[in-house]
Image 1 (cartoon, one colour):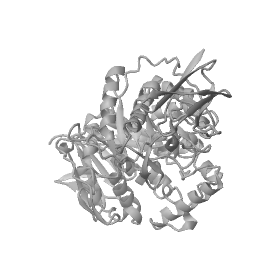
Image 2 (cartoon, helix red, strand yellow):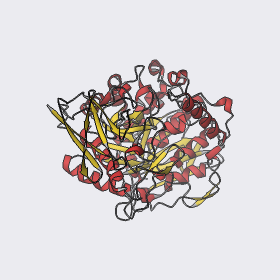
Image 3 (cartoon, helix red, strand yellow):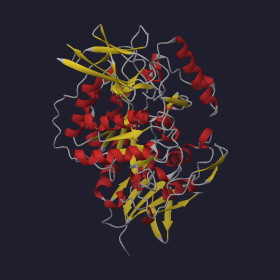
Image 4 (cartoon, helix red, strand yellow):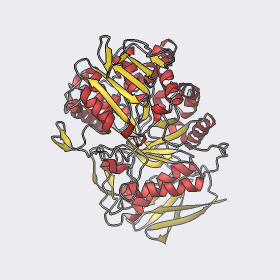
Length: 572
């Protein structure tokens, strides 16, 4: 049994590989690569690289398995898992519903295997995609995963690489597609050694060092990213990736790294004969992210924070921080009809004009994800408080109805479907004392910019912050909101009008003073009352009631709540 070890390391003059306690010299293999074949090595063998005269080995930048964490040795891992999902046809994003979750807090045990036991809940709910927050190996035991440093390895406390494959397989068996959150805009602050191997870095973001995507010697750095993208999709049978904060990618090439990703994923999709999806998180409000190549980057979709901001501010009255421009019913109606509220308008929070209009005649709405909350919009609040902390079941139903009957791709965040009362706070578990203090200070400084006092900020390094953020599944049995979510999702399934992505066939009426709006979805009307008082809504002589289930005629289909109704109106 032999194993060949390869690593790209153009910076050091000498590279050795330590395998199961024995050191072997590596030979140059061209282009900055080094290679060595070692006898008696195979799956499970622990190894690391010794650079120049170093006496302490460092992990493989392309490590697939870190059994002892990011500061430990890598372990040889072969993609030899025996899959049983060969008949899985995949799932395209249009018409689908996404459910975002964090493995560490989704169940009490916080592992991929324990999460499998809750998948039937998602099937009964009616969602199509499970979106996992980052799985890459990061420093510590628990955290959000956005400070990963070994992008090819699955975080061991979640179960490691085989556990992710078991989870994906279990999802496919139930008809659920799986999307993974992938972070390429920065590395975490601890456990990373990429810069010791080669010219991987080219500056910093507010979160950490950013990659050299367009400077000298950047070809292999880009390859590092592109190979990681295709490896997740091919080797772990994932159905898509959510690309974190793509606005922070620093790339000045004529062909942007996002365009390259999309092109390579299209090729891979043809090879594996199933849909593969790339979804961006972008703060740019730029439709070019999802515009087909070559005019745009050609990604399948992007998150749309503007709809979230409009909805939350309208329902809660919150105006501090980046919510300052949002909150009116008119703003919500604009974002629903035209995708972005800031589409070239002045942003008070940014103190500049922001965004670009979307061509609603040619751009389908399924390219934008709409949501009442996500991990950022809860966890990046001082207390990690959910909408359920502030709103009645009726108003939570209003928020759900607007998102789930809109032309956009709906996304839910774990627990929102039953109005979870547990917070989702920012937590981390760095073992280094200096990093602990800098993380605490950084969170306080960040929240101060948004108007929160230091006393309101949960301590990210306190284990109790992590424990508080775990879902309480005992709440489900007495949650009236869950039935509303199930009915709304079933209604979206039953009526093609509600998943129609054509924005030119969609319109919104609203009344600012009475705080109601109506979504026109073919012959369906979604009437949402955002006030706390009953309302009677009349549009062009058509009477629509929103203070409970209402009917326009005896054959109307109705799903109603305390503050909203979905009614079918026959042609007069």
